[in-house]
Length: 142
Image (cartoon, rainbow, N blue to C red; front, side):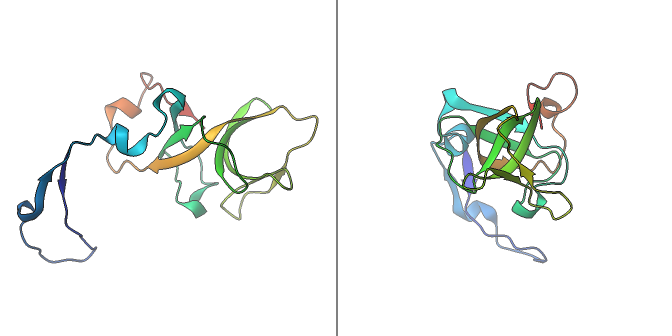
């Protein structure tokens, strides 16, 4: 991976040549974003319930099954047969959205509930990728 170490702010009208700080790194995006490759999967976010934490419709979620879930983690879970991405309140057994338009969900004893993993990173694609669109995608739609 090649890295240009400049800071760019919105509204800039010009900046010096990025090539001045050009460096070659021995690092891949996999190494940067995925901590436990054999326990990690990708999912695509669907909907607006997590916008308050910066997860938007169509974002790619990096979900780690190896990480221990802690209170207030963002998780992917199977809740009564549907995959959901929510903030978990382990103390009160609640699934929280990061958008006031969505209600809090209580996890009851009779619910089918399993945590699939912790969202450790999210990626926003500003331009569509053929890898993440259409029927050929191996991403889990949440």
